[in-house]
Length: 461
Image 1 (tube, rainbow, N blue to C red):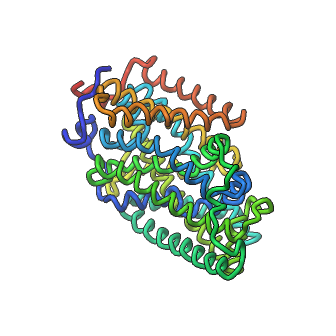
Image 2: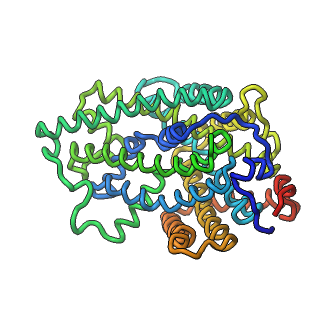
Image 3: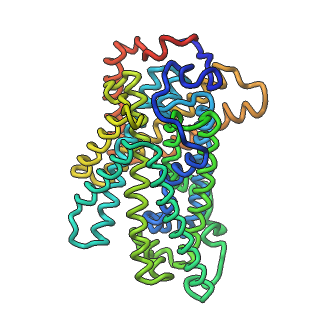
């Protein structure tokens, strides 16, 4: 297929063969809010103990390294969202950057992430709920959160925006309270009794192996930034807003991640004996007592159960909508609610899947689906940046172009491929099986990869 000569300035999404169906109204601050809630400001609290043990007490450094590593892929999203400000995320970017058929493969792979991540989060929240209220029905927690989040998703992004701001305030207050209580605890002689650099850097312990292992651990902690790109058709000036929002959100997250894990590490300097599952909450108990411990657990349930799952469901529905309107999956997924202007069918479908999967799959299995889908599609995204800008558009006349469109995509691919080497055999089996199924579906829908979506047939190329 010849190179596509359209951009955001040439007529909105109509320039890409679509019509505006979703309701615009999101600003830069709304997109950033969506991103930080999707990635979850308090995300380190649930996995802190495990990372602290694996990193030898240097969890903050792990997040710093992970931020640098994932930034190469994030910059790829920034470049592609500026050129192709349409819903669909990596599906649309690879579709336009390489060709529609490779784009379908990328979309199919990221579905492995987007479809299963709500279920993964639901299992986590249900487990916390039972721990908070012993004897409560585990599945009832799943049912309540799925019902609430699906209703809000159908009602639209404006209603969701209001919910997001409330959850954001709760999370920020919780983090500030923990840092304040932790600081007071340390200055009072508790924990390490002083502020040291040990959680950030320990001479002789940081080498190439440590950096590589840190990439494997922390890259996955920033998953969710990509979902911000699915809001392009509901955002004002998406060609400027989406990419900028992704970078700002990631910068906010690394600062917040490092701050809270640094304080936690000083509260419990004996990282060898930390509880891998409840390490952060034990630190909260030490500095704030049992009441703060319970409150922090409640905040995690609310933040993940509402904001995180809701935003994950939003991204999933927009991806299914984008693929459905192209006809590469059943067109029912491309249906838009006449009143709320939301992809209601896709939202309900994700809700139904989220109700069923937790009954059959545990967190470990769901994590394999999510991680393989996200990272494999990220590899294709980086390749698309290189192919579209460096090869097709020949943007290689300046040092800046070479860095942005050659060096960064290559580094992004290499980092992601290294993370792949850390997966276990079941992950490869699940991922490859999903890929094979996708290739078969793609071949059938495109009649042997010969036909392209309708949107491509009417463009000037």
